[in-house]
Image 1 (cartoon, rainbow, N blue to C red):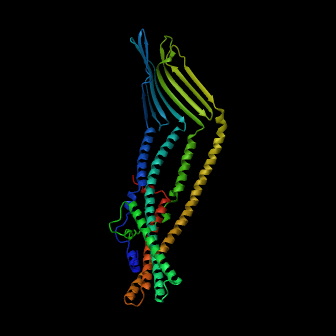
Image 2: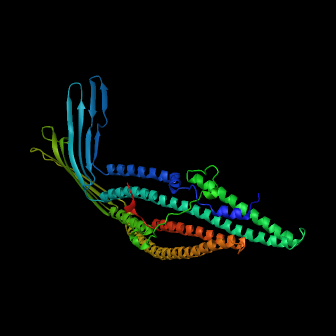
Image 3: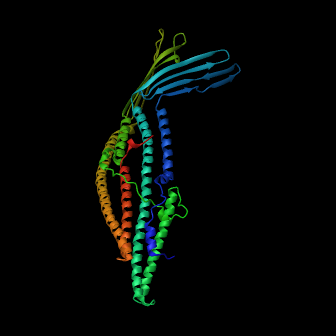
Length: 473
Protein backbone atom coordinates (compact mmCIF):
# COMPACT_ATOMS: atom_id res chain seq x y z
CA UNK A 1 0.00 0.00 0.00
CA UNK A 2 1.44 3.35 -1.04
CA UNK A 3 0.92 6.46 0.99
CA UNK A 4 1.96 10.06 0.64
CA UNK A 5 5.39 10.69 2.11
CA UNK A 6 4.14 13.77 3.91
CA UNK A 7 1.24 11.80 5.34
CA UNK A 8 3.51 9.02 6.58
CA UNK A 9 5.88 11.42 8.31
CA UNK A 10 3.32 13.76 9.85
CA UNK A 11 1.00 10.92 10.94
CA UNK A 12 3.83 8.91 12.47
CA UNK A 13 5.39 11.92 14.16
CA UNK A 14 2.03 12.71 15.74
CA UNK A 15 2.06 9.51 17.82
CA UNK A 16 2.39 9.24 21.61
CA UNK A 17 -0.83 11.10 22.28
CA UNK A 18 -3.59 8.73 23.35
CA UNK A 19 -3.91 5.78 25.74
CA UNK A 20 -0.76 4.66 27.52
CA UNK A 21 0.48 1.32 28.86
CA UNK A 22 0.78 1.84 32.60
CA UNK A 23 3.56 0.67 34.88
CA UNK A 24 0.95 -0.32 37.44
CA UNK A 25 -0.70 -2.66 34.95
CA UNK A 26 2.69 -4.15 34.10
CA UNK A 27 3.45 -4.81 37.78
CA UNK A 28 0.00 -6.24 38.46
CA UNK A 29 0.54 -8.67 35.60
CA UNK A 30 3.90 -9.86 36.96
CA UNK A 31 3.46 -13.39 38.30
CA UNK A 32 6.91 -13.45 39.89
CA UNK A 33 5.90 -10.57 42.15
CA UNK A 34 2.84 -12.52 43.25
CA UNK A 35 4.92 -15.63 43.91
CA UNK A 36 7.49 -13.72 45.97
CA UNK A 37 4.71 -12.19 48.06
CA UNK A 38 3.63 -15.73 48.95
CA UNK A 39 7.25 -16.63 49.80
CA UNK A 40 7.25 -13.79 52.34
CA UNK A 41 4.16 -15.24 54.03
CA UNK A 42 5.77 -18.70 54.14
CA UNK A 43 8.95 -17.23 55.68
CA UNK A 44 6.87 -15.51 58.37
CA UNK A 45 5.32 -18.85 59.30
CA UNK A 46 8.74 -20.52 59.34
CA UNK A 47 10.08 -17.85 61.70
CA UNK A 48 7.09 -18.31 63.99
CA UNK A 49 7.72 -22.06 64.02
CA UNK A 50 11.41 -21.53 64.80
CA UNK A 51 10.52 -19.23 67.69
CA UNK A 52 8.22 -21.88 69.10
CA UNK A 53 10.87 -24.59 68.76
CA UNK A 54 13.39 -22.42 70.60
CA UNK A 55 10.98 -21.46 73.38
CA UNK A 56 9.81 -23.27 76.50
CA UNK A 57 8.99 -26.86 75.67
CA UNK A 58 6.63 -29.09 77.68
CA UNK A 59 6.28 -32.80 77.04
CA UNK A 60 3.72 -35.10 78.70
CA UNK A 61 3.87 -38.86 78.27
CA UNK A 62 1.97 -41.81 79.65
CA UNK A 63 4.84 -44.12 78.88
CA UNK A 64 4.21 -47.66 77.73
CA UNK A 65 1.30 -49.33 79.46
CA UNK A 66 1.83 -53.03 80.09
CA UNK A 67 -1.05 -55.41 80.75
CA UNK A 68 -0.22 -58.83 82.18
CA UNK A 69 -2.93 -61.48 82.22
CA UNK A 70 -2.66 -64.51 84.52
CA UNK A 71 -4.84 -66.86 86.59
CA UNK A 72 -4.51 -64.53 89.56
CA UNK A 73 -5.86 -61.58 87.64
CA UNK A 74 -4.71 -58.71 85.49
CA UNK A 75 -1.68 -56.53 86.34
CA UNK A 76 -1.08 -53.08 84.87
CA UNK A 77 2.13 -51.07 84.89
CA UNK A 78 2.66 -47.48 83.69
CA UNK A 79 5.64 -45.14 83.50
CA UNK A 80 4.15 -41.63 83.14
CA UNK A 81 6.51 -38.65 82.83
CA UNK A 82 6.51 -34.92 82.33
CA UNK A 83 9.36 -32.67 81.26
CA UNK A 84 9.83 -28.95 80.80
CA UNK A 85 12.84 -27.31 79.18
CA UNK A 86 13.93 -23.69 78.96
CA UNK A 87 16.51 -23.53 76.14
CA UNK A 88 17.27 -19.85 76.72
CA UNK A 89 18.54 -20.63 80.25
CA UNK A 90 21.53 -22.91 79.57
CA UNK A 91 19.20 -25.68 78.38
CA UNK A 92 17.66 -25.79 81.86
CA UNK A 93 15.21 -28.68 82.09
CA UNK A 94 12.88 -30.07 84.71
CA UNK A 95 11.56 -33.61 84.69
CA UNK A 96 9.30 -35.86 86.70
CA UNK A 97 8.58 -39.57 86.20
CA UNK A 98 7.16 -42.51 88.09
CA UNK A 99 6.38 -46.21 87.86
CA UNK A 100 2.86 -47.28 88.70
CA UNK A 101 1.89 -50.93 89.18
CA UNK A 102 -1.67 -52.06 89.76
CA UNK A 103 -3.30 -55.41 90.34
CA UNK A 104 -6.80 -56.42 91.33
CA UNK A 105 -5.81 -56.29 95.00
CA UNK A 106 -3.19 -53.55 95.28
CA UNK A 107 -1.45 -50.57 93.73
CA UNK A 108 2.14 -49.38 94.14
CA UNK A 109 4.01 -46.28 93.10
CA UNK A 110 7.80 -46.53 92.91
CA UNK A 111 10.77 -44.67 91.47
CA UNK A 112 9.01 -41.30 91.46
CA UNK A 113 11.80 -38.95 90.37
CA UNK A 114 12.08 -35.20 90.25
CA UNK A 115 15.09 -33.76 88.45
CA UNK A 116 16.70 -30.63 87.15
CA UNK A 117 19.67 -30.33 84.79
CA UNK A 118 21.55 -27.64 82.92
CA UNK A 119 24.41 -27.27 80.47
CA UNK A 120 27.22 -25.42 82.18
CA UNK A 121 29.51 -25.41 79.14
CA UNK A 122 28.09 -26.31 75.74
CA UNK A 123 27.34 -24.95 72.28
CA UNK A 124 23.60 -25.66 72.39
CA UNK A 125 22.68 -22.08 73.27
CA UNK A 126 24.72 -20.75 70.37
CA UNK A 127 23.22 -23.37 68.05
CA UNK A 128 19.70 -22.24 68.93
CA UNK A 129 20.76 -18.64 68.35
CA UNK A 130 22.07 -19.62 64.91
CA UNK A 131 18.83 -21.38 64.03
CA UNK A 132 16.78 -18.36 65.04
CA UNK A 133 19.09 -15.98 63.15
CA UNK A 134 18.80 -18.11 60.02
CA UNK A 135 15.01 -18.13 60.25
CA UNK A 136 15.01 -14.35 60.64
CA UNK A 137 17.40 -14.08 57.70
CA UNK A 138 15.15 -16.24 55.55
CA UNK A 139 12.25 -13.87 56.18
CA UNK A 140 14.42 -10.81 55.53
CA UNK A 141 15.74 -12.35 52.31
CA UNK A 142 12.20 -13.07 51.13
CA UNK A 143 11.21 -9.46 51.79
CA UNK A 144 14.30 -8.21 49.98
CA UNK A 145 13.57 -10.37 46.94
CA UNK A 146 10.03 -9.03 46.80
CA UNK A 147 11.30 -5.47 47.16
CA UNK A 148 13.93 -5.94 44.44
CA UNK A 149 11.54 -7.68 42.07
CA UNK A 150 9.37 -4.57 41.99
CA UNK A 151 12.41 -2.57 40.86
CA UNK A 152 13.45 -5.22 38.36
CA UNK A 153 9.94 -5.34 36.88
CA UNK A 154 9.91 -1.56 36.61
CA UNK A 155 13.28 -1.71 34.86
CA UNK A 156 11.93 -4.32 32.44
CA UNK A 157 8.92 -2.11 31.72
CA UNK A 158 11.08 0.88 30.81
CA UNK A 159 13.58 -1.26 28.91
CA UNK A 160 10.78 -2.47 26.66
CA UNK A 161 9.65 1.12 26.20
CA UNK A 162 13.21 2.01 25.18
CA UNK A 163 13.14 -0.65 22.51
CA UNK A 164 9.84 0.67 21.16
CA UNK A 165 11.13 4.25 21.09
CA UNK A 166 14.33 3.15 19.34
CA UNK A 167 12.19 1.45 16.72
CA UNK A 168 10.33 4.73 16.29
CA UNK A 169 13.61 6.59 15.78
CA UNK A 170 14.67 4.00 13.23
CA UNK A 171 11.38 4.50 11.36
CA UNK A 172 11.95 8.25 11.32
CA UNK A 173 15.42 7.79 9.89
CA UNK A 174 14.22 5.35 7.24
CA UNK A 175 11.30 7.60 6.29
CA UNK A 176 13.68 10.52 5.82
CA UNK A 177 15.86 8.38 3.54
CA UNK A 178 12.75 7.38 1.62
CA UNK A 179 11.79 10.97 1.06
CA UNK A 180 15.26 11.93 -0.15
CA UNK A 181 15.41 8.93 -2.52
CA UNK A 182 12.00 9.76 -3.93
CA UNK A 183 13.05 13.35 -4.60
CA UNK A 184 16.09 12.01 -6.44
CA UNK A 185 13.85 9.67 -8.43
CA UNK A 186 11.55 12.54 -9.34
CA UNK A 187 14.55 14.50 -10.59
CA UNK A 188 15.52 11.55 -12.80
CA UNK A 189 11.98 11.41 -14.16
CA UNK A 190 12.07 15.14 -14.86
CA UNK A 191 15.29 14.74 -16.83
CA UNK A 192 13.52 12.33 -19.16
CA UNK A 193 15.36 9.11 -18.50
CA UNK A 194 13.80 6.05 -20.09
CA UNK A 195 11.92 3.68 -17.79
CA UNK A 196 14.11 0.87 -19.07
CA UNK A 197 17.37 2.67 -18.34
CA UNK A 198 19.56 1.37 -15.50
CA UNK A 199 19.64 4.78 -13.79
CA UNK A 200 15.84 5.04 -13.81
CA UNK A 201 15.33 1.46 -12.61
CA UNK A 202 17.99 1.73 -9.90
CA UNK A 203 16.41 4.90 -8.48
CA UNK A 204 12.94 3.37 -8.68
CA UNK A 205 14.04 0.19 -6.90
CA UNK A 206 15.68 2.28 -4.18
CA UNK A 207 12.38 4.04 -3.53
CA UNK A 208 10.47 0.76 -3.50
CA UNK A 209 13.05 -0.76 -1.17
CA UNK A 210 12.77 2.20 1.21
CA UNK A 211 8.98 2.01 1.17
CA UNK A 212 9.12 -1.70 1.99
CA UNK A 213 11.59 -1.09 4.83
CA UNK A 214 9.39 1.65 6.29
CA UNK A 215 6.30 -0.53 6.14
CA UNK A 216 8.20 -3.47 7.66
CA UNK A 217 9.44 -1.42 10.59
CA UNK A 218 6.01 0.05 11.18
CA UNK A 219 4.51 -3.43 11.24
CA UNK A 220 7.24 -4.54 13.66
CA UNK A 221 6.36 -1.62 15.91
CA UNK A 222 2.68 -2.51 15.69
CA UNK A 223 3.44 -6.10 16.68
CA UNK A 224 5.64 -5.07 19.59
CA UNK A 225 3.03 -2.59 20.82
CA UNK A 226 0.35 -5.30 20.86
CA UNK A 227 2.66 -7.61 22.85
CA UNK A 228 3.64 -4.82 25.25
CA UNK A 229 -0.04 -3.93 25.76
CA UNK A 230 -0.79 -7.50 26.84
CA UNK A 231 2.05 -7.37 29.37
CA UNK A 232 0.54 -4.18 30.78
CA UNK A 233 -2.77 -5.98 31.23
CA UNK A 234 -4.51 -3.86 28.61
CA UNK A 235 -5.26 -3.80 24.87
CA UNK A 236 -5.26 -1.24 22.10
CA UNK A 237 -8.56 0.59 21.65
CA UNK A 238 -10.66 0.14 18.52
CA UNK A 239 -9.22 2.22 15.72
CA UNK A 240 -6.19 3.24 17.78
CA UNK A 241 -2.88 3.08 15.95
CA UNK A 242 -0.25 1.09 17.83
CA UNK A 243 2.19 4.00 17.68
CA UNK A 244 -0.43 6.15 19.38
CA UNK A 245 -0.39 3.73 22.30
CA UNK A 246 3.05 4.70 23.60
CA UNK A 247 3.44 7.26 26.41
CA UNK A 248 3.91 10.86 25.34
CA UNK A 249 5.77 11.69 28.52
CA UNK A 250 8.01 9.82 30.93
CA UNK A 251 8.00 10.63 34.66
CA UNK A 252 10.83 13.00 35.54
CA UNK A 253 12.80 11.74 38.55
CA UNK A 254 15.72 13.07 40.53
CA UNK A 255 18.98 11.19 40.18
CA UNK A 256 20.05 9.03 43.09
CA UNK A 257 23.44 9.78 44.61
CA UNK A 258 25.21 6.48 45.18
CA UNK A 259 27.14 8.05 48.07
CA UNK A 260 23.86 8.29 50.00
CA UNK A 261 23.98 4.53 50.56
CA UNK A 262 26.36 3.25 53.29
CA UNK A 263 29.10 0.93 52.13
CA UNK A 264 27.93 -1.68 54.65
CA UNK A 265 24.58 -1.99 52.83
CA UNK A 266 26.22 -2.94 49.51
CA UNK A 267 24.66 -6.34 48.83
CA UNK A 268 27.85 -8.37 48.51
CA UNK A 269 29.51 -6.70 51.50
CA UNK A 270 26.45 -7.22 53.69
CA UNK A 271 26.08 -10.84 52.60
CA UNK A 272 29.77 -11.60 53.13
CA UNK A 273 29.66 -10.01 56.60
CA UNK A 274 26.57 -12.01 57.53
CA UNK A 275 28.13 -15.26 56.29
CA UNK A 276 31.24 -14.53 58.34
CA UNK A 277 29.17 -13.87 61.47
CA UNK A 278 27.18 -17.11 61.11
CA UNK A 279 30.32 -19.13 60.37
CA UNK A 280 32.03 -17.75 63.47
CA UNK A 281 29.02 -18.61 65.63
CA UNK A 282 29.03 -22.15 64.25
CA UNK A 283 32.70 -22.48 65.14
CA UNK A 284 31.97 -21.22 68.64
CA UNK A 285 29.14 -23.74 68.98
CA UNK A 286 31.55 -26.57 68.20
CA UNK A 287 33.19 -26.50 71.64
CA UNK A 288 36.11 -28.75 72.55
CA UNK A 289 35.01 -29.04 76.19
CA UNK A 290 31.44 -29.53 77.40
CA UNK A 291 30.01 -29.89 80.90
CA UNK A 292 26.49 -30.51 82.18
CA UNK A 293 25.18 -31.05 85.71
CA UNK A 294 21.97 -32.47 87.05
CA UNK A 295 20.31 -33.12 90.39
CA UNK A 296 17.07 -34.65 91.53
CA UNK A 297 15.08 -36.55 94.12
CA UNK A 298 13.66 -40.07 93.78
CA UNK A 299 10.91 -41.41 96.02
CA UNK A 300 11.22 -45.12 96.79
CA UNK A 301 14.13 -45.78 94.52
CA UNK A 302 13.90 -49.46 93.57
CA UNK A 303 17.70 -49.61 93.33
CA UNK A 304 18.17 -48.76 97.02
CA UNK A 305 16.75 -50.73 99.96
CA UNK A 306 17.12 -50.16 103.71
CA UNK A 307 17.57 -52.83 106.40
CA UNK A 308 13.81 -53.28 106.66
CA UNK A 309 13.61 -54.18 102.98
CA UNK A 310 11.83 -51.00 102.01
CA UNK A 311 12.87 -48.75 99.16
CA UNK A 312 14.84 -45.65 100.13
CA UNK A 313 14.27 -42.12 98.94
CA UNK A 314 17.44 -40.87 97.25
CA UNK A 315 19.04 -37.62 96.28
CA UNK A 316 20.47 -37.97 92.78
CA UNK A 317 23.44 -36.03 91.41
CA UNK A 318 24.91 -36.46 87.93
CA UNK A 319 27.54 -34.85 85.77
CA UNK A 320 28.87 -35.42 82.28
CA UNK A 321 31.69 -33.82 80.33
CA UNK A 322 33.46 -34.20 77.06
CA UNK A 323 36.75 -33.08 75.58
CA UNK A 324 37.37 -33.81 71.93
CA UNK A 325 37.11 -37.62 71.76
CA UNK A 326 36.94 -38.24 75.53
CA UNK A 327 33.54 -38.49 77.24
CA UNK A 328 33.11 -38.96 81.00
CA UNK A 329 29.97 -39.46 83.00
CA UNK A 330 29.34 -39.82 86.73
CA UNK A 331 26.30 -40.11 88.96
CA UNK A 332 25.47 -40.87 92.56
CA UNK A 333 22.25 -41.76 94.38
CA UNK A 334 22.40 -40.85 98.06
CA UNK A 335 19.80 -42.77 100.14
CA UNK A 336 18.01 -40.85 102.86
CA UNK A 337 18.16 -43.44 105.64
CA UNK A 338 19.83 -43.69 109.00
CA UNK A 339 20.34 -47.43 109.32
CA UNK A 340 21.88 -48.33 105.95
CA UNK A 341 23.69 -45.61 104.02
CA UNK A 342 24.80 -47.36 100.84
CA UNK A 343 25.20 -44.82 98.03
CA UNK A 344 24.88 -45.97 94.42
CA UNK A 345 27.58 -44.68 92.07
CA UNK A 346 27.53 -44.81 88.27
CA UNK A 347 30.61 -44.12 86.15
CA UNK A 348 31.07 -44.14 82.39
CA UNK A 349 33.84 -43.30 79.99
CA UNK A 350 34.41 -43.52 76.25
CA UNK A 351 37.26 -42.55 73.95
CA UNK A 352 37.23 -41.87 70.22
CA UNK A 353 40.88 -41.59 69.07
CA UNK A 354 39.94 -40.21 65.66
CA UNK A 355 38.40 -37.13 67.23
CA UNK A 356 41.68 -36.39 69.02
CA UNK A 357 43.54 -36.78 65.75
CA UNK A 358 41.17 -34.53 63.81
CA UNK A 359 40.93 -31.79 66.47
CA UNK A 360 44.07 -29.99 65.25
CA UNK A 361 42.94 -30.38 61.64
CA UNK A 362 39.63 -28.76 62.55
CA UNK A 363 41.46 -25.82 64.12
CA UNK A 364 43.59 -25.34 61.03
CA UNK A 365 40.54 -25.57 58.77
CA UNK A 366 38.72 -23.00 60.89
CA UNK A 367 41.61 -20.58 60.55
CA UNK A 368 41.72 -21.04 56.78
CA UNK A 369 37.98 -20.44 56.62
CA UNK A 370 38.39 -17.21 58.59
CA UNK A 371 40.99 -15.99 56.12
CA UNK A 372 38.78 -16.88 53.17
CA UNK A 373 35.82 -15.09 54.70
CA UNK A 374 37.94 -11.98 55.17
CA UNK A 375 39.13 -12.16 51.57
CA UNK A 376 35.51 -12.37 50.42
CA UNK A 377 34.71 -9.19 52.36
CA UNK A 378 37.74 -7.38 50.93
CA UNK A 379 36.77 -8.50 47.42
CA UNK A 380 33.24 -7.18 47.96
CA UNK A 381 34.63 -3.84 49.14
CA UNK A 382 36.79 -3.59 46.01
CA UNK A 383 33.75 -4.37 43.86
CA UNK A 384 31.78 -1.69 45.72
CA UNK A 385 34.43 0.92 44.95
CA UNK A 386 34.37 -0.02 41.26
CA UNK A 387 30.58 0.15 41.20
CA UNK A 388 30.65 3.65 42.72
CA UNK A 389 33.01 4.92 40.03
CA UNK A 390 31.01 3.22 37.27
CA UNK A 391 27.66 4.59 38.44
CA UNK A 392 28.96 8.11 38.92
CA UNK A 393 30.32 8.11 35.38
CA UNK A 394 27.08 6.64 34.06
CA UNK A 395 25.11 9.41 35.75
CA UNK A 396 27.39 12.05 34.23
CA UNK A 397 26.83 10.53 30.79
CA UNK A 398 23.04 10.61 31.26
CA UNK A 399 23.13 14.23 32.39
CA UNK A 400 25.35 15.19 29.45
CA UNK A 401 23.00 13.40 27.05
CA UNK A 402 19.95 15.13 28.53
CA UNK A 403 21.56 18.53 28.21
CA UNK A 404 22.83 18.11 24.65
CA UNK A 405 19.64 16.45 23.39
CA UNK A 406 17.53 19.17 24.96
CA UNK A 407 19.63 21.90 23.35
CA UNK A 408 19.54 20.16 19.96
CA UNK A 409 15.78 19.65 20.22
CA UNK A 410 15.22 23.33 20.95
CA UNK A 411 17.35 24.20 17.95
CA UNK A 412 15.42 21.93 15.59
CA UNK A 413 12.09 23.01 17.07
CA UNK A 414 12.85 26.65 16.30
CA UNK A 415 14.15 25.70 12.86
CA UNK A 416 11.06 23.59 12.07
CA UNK A 417 8.73 26.46 13.04
CA UNK A 418 10.62 28.91 10.84
CA UNK A 419 10.87 26.52 7.91
CA UNK A 420 7.15 25.77 8.08
CA UNK A 421 6.48 29.46 7.52
CA UNK A 422 8.98 29.50 4.66
CA UNK A 423 7.35 26.39 3.15
CA UNK A 424 3.90 27.96 3.33
CA UNK A 425 5.34 31.04 1.62
CA UNK A 426 6.98 28.93 -1.08
CA UNK A 427 10.48 30.04 -0.18
CA UNK A 428 11.86 26.52 0.50
CA UNK A 429 11.14 22.98 -0.66
CA UNK A 430 9.18 20.40 1.28
CA UNK A 431 12.38 18.38 1.63
CA UNK A 432 14.07 21.06 3.69
CA UNK A 433 11.11 21.43 6.02
CA UNK A 434 10.56 17.68 6.53
CA UNK A 435 14.25 17.16 7.26
CA UNK A 436 14.13 19.68 10.13
CA UNK A 437 10.79 18.27 11.29
CA UNK A 438 12.19 14.75 11.37
CA UNK A 439 15.25 15.81 13.34
CA UNK A 440 13.05 17.65 15.84
CA UNK A 441 10.91 14.56 16.44
CA UNK A 442 13.94 12.30 16.60
CA UNK A 443 15.45 14.38 19.39
CA UNK A 444 12.11 14.60 21.17
CA UNK A 445 12.11 10.83 21.43
CA UNK A 446 15.76 10.85 22.50
CA UNK A 447 14.78 13.17 25.34
CA UNK A 448 12.19 10.58 26.43
CA UNK A 449 14.92 7.95 26.29
CA UNK A 450 17.09 10.12 28.55
CA UNK A 451 14.28 10.21 31.12
CA UNK A 452 13.95 6.42 30.86
CA UNK A 453 17.71 5.93 31.23
CA UNK A 454 17.66 7.97 34.44
CA UNK A 455 14.86 5.82 35.88
CA UNK A 456 16.75 2.65 34.95
CA UNK A 457 19.94 4.12 36.45
CA UNK A 458 18.11 4.78 39.73
CA UNK A 459 16.71 1.24 39.78
CA UNK A 460 20.07 -0.36 39.07
CA UNK A 461 21.73 1.78 41.74
CA UNK A 462 19.13 0.80 44.34
CA UNK A 463 19.57 -2.88 43.46
CA UNK A 464 23.24 -2.63 44.44
CA UNK A 465 22.25 -2.08 48.08
CA UNK A 466 19.96 -3.55 50.71
CA UNK A 467 17.33 -1.00 51.66
CA UNK A 468 15.79 -2.61 54.73
CA UNK A 469 14.50 0.74 56.04
CA UNK A 470 12.19 0.89 53.00
CA UNK A 471 10.65 -2.55 53.56
CA UNK A 472 7.07 -2.50 54.72
CA UNK A 473 5.60 -5.43 56.65
